Amino acid sequence: MILGIDVSTYLEELAHGARYFDGDVQIDPLDAFYANGVNFMRIRLWNHPFGEAGEPYLAGSCDMEHYLRLASLAKGKGYRLLLDFHYSDFWADPGKQMLPKAWRGYTLPELADAVYAFTKDCLMRAKEANLAPDMIQVGNEITNGMLWPVGRLEKDGVRGNYEAFCMLVKAGCRACREVVPEAEIVLHLERSHDQAVYREFFSEMQKADVDYDIIGASYYPYWHGTPEQLMENLDQCRVFRKKRMIMELGYGFTTEGYSAGEDKVRLVIEAERAYVPGFTEQYPMTPEGQAAFVRDFLALARRNGIDGVFYWEPLWIPGEGICWASEKGQEYIGEEGKSTANEWANQCLFDYEGRKLPAFDSYC
Image (tube, rainbow, N blue to C red; front, side, top):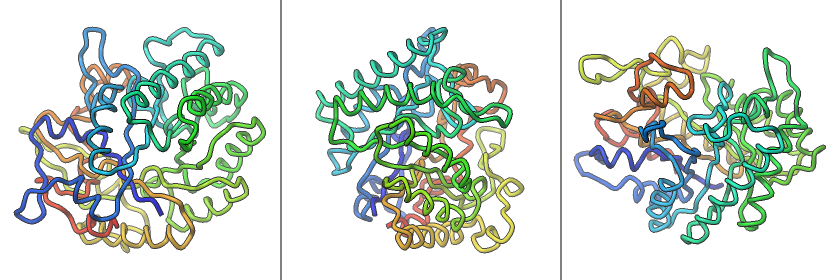
């Protein structure tokens, strides 16, 4: 089974002086992961994560130049590469799939042409730099579609519009096959306990003859049911004869926030929002509970024939200037007024001071 990590913020961490430790000894975390058997790096790609005057959106400001720098570092250490196209200028997930600023007002055919051209151009640049990915995600957590409103699949609980969505996805897949035919293509959803949605989505992909290789899922216990429900869902997906992978995995080591200046940061997952009856008692959000979850999850994935698991942002520790979004980034996705501080830091495999947690050694 492939083990991977998504550390798309890592270069930003280093630029702000982040350091990582095993006990009292400073380490290179990428070398340490690789020594554990982790050999794939997933890197997200945003179209243009900058404001009109060039202000970075942060959280890695993951444009194509960023991909080339991080991919070069990873490949030099022996990692294989997964390029994750979001087809947005910033975060794309089930609740938001914003059109890139440059594509606003496009018709469906114009959007499909833009997806094809952007995908092809990025992959050509990667290939010319000898950094072509081994896997490619065409969209990120696209359960509800992408490039809204044109490619939206669900609104107010009603699902549909697959014809338009498939036109966009097929444009991206076609570019992937033309430039990097040896790379495997991933279609990545969340809601990974929902058998009905997965059956519907991938049946529609089959009906439209979408060319892909891997069914990808996000799995966070707070939102996606139990590991057993996840595995039952992925087991029913065997009918589509594709590989099955967990593209994002995470679990917290604490529910306590950290201080950023005078304020204590409010985390995405805190005690009241993390509680899952029965599950949280078995895997409390402590360093030991996180380690037990990671160990048991990987064992379950192997028993169920899962082809790969990627841990999401295990190095995104807090620090001065380390943000999930700048104010300009918040403005782009319509989430102004929230704290900009890193609200995901309690899901890392290093603590708030950069010390390796027990779960790091479970991820092997």
